[in-house]
Length: 492
Image (cartoon, rainbow, N blue to C red):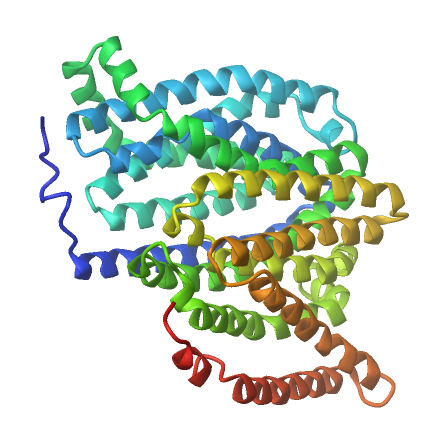
């Protein structure tokens, strides 16, 4: 058995872990920043209909991509033997090739014969789907191989590189004959170039697998890690049911311009919110892991952190609810004013979804992954059904956006409710924080609306934020937020 990865795989270098976590966290934040700046630029170069067609393409690519490698890239990291890990690299890429070719046909049929925004897609986009899926699998697998070697700087560079390439190609193609299709063509070009630029680490394990393995060896190592396609891949796919299923539903039944506006509203609100929440969740993860499977001693601390994140993020959401159309129209232009109307309810849903990322690792720590899989399925299907019901009642774009946001908010609240039960925090512990976050976010537009007839809008916003800040200080003092209440909690 070969184990030439450099150091004992059972040893933990805390300094290296901390440095790697910092590198990855900073790269994620910078990549999100690049994405946000690119979105602002792209919104001035492309119309909402082009964004709708791009959303349709990305929905198909995401659904195909989840099944593409069957999550064998995770096994590349956890496998202890280096030869078997190299074989898993080969397995991942072979599965991705087969999956892309088979499922791209179904996705292409959906694009070619679908209605709404689907009909706005160029036929050439179908041929771009396998390229994006394969390129994504190559990038992810190369990152997994480098993570195994603890080459965190490479993983950070690949994240930043893909984000920069995506923005550069899409912005550059706006001034060419590609027209509105530049968003889709730029996505294909960016992924292919990123795969070539950052996929070179795959050459070593592929050569190693080819020289030491036969088909039987590949089958054996794939069977030994059958939990990846059997559990991790379904969990990842289920997680896409509402996110991408709702997009497919919308692009098949609503105009492309509406889908583009809703898609941009979601991207510009969710990305900054989830960046903050996920960073807190990543920092909290080691503390949860150190506590073992019984997380009840950390109940007060975890809930205080969750509440703190909610109350810090709520004012920005409140400002979007109150002045979304003006905020979107000022930098992006009048065609995007309607997207600002969607941003209000969408940002509330984004806030609640971001809160779930703070405690998403609790199931892993508690050893309840199968429960997480069932919960994930139930939440996503229920949210999709709620969206279908809402679409039947909605009369215009704003109504559809509200229905979509309510369905997503219900999914987040249900997830937090179940999380509290599973980890022993109590049925209403985490979900109560979601309700408090929603009320806190709505406080800002309520005060701003009440003051509109008395003072100008800027003064109304300032007054609303001042009232919110005073209420936050009072609440923090009264509840012992991150203070005495957390320390008083008795273990067990």
